[in-house]
Image (tube, rainbow, N blue to C red; front, side, top):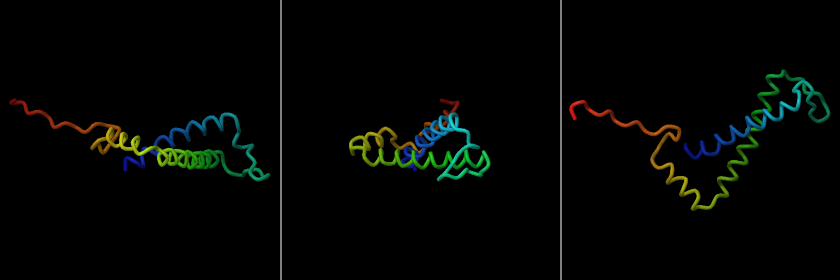
Length: 99
């Protein structure tokens, strides 16, 4: 699962940045696709735009991961260790009061 996170999470962040920049410069109500005006609601345009940006960024992150040298992949796996959740370290068992 952590390998999927290594691809999807950076892609999610990059898609959010790309969408913010894109829709800061372009009004979703004035978009044209194949010469025809897009008749979707603003929310639907933002959502579809984000999903398309995310798919492109997933492709980019996946290609980067697949093209990494084996040594770099092994170093990533070693750095991750046996941690199941890369966001938080595993919890330690509470110490007993009598010790």
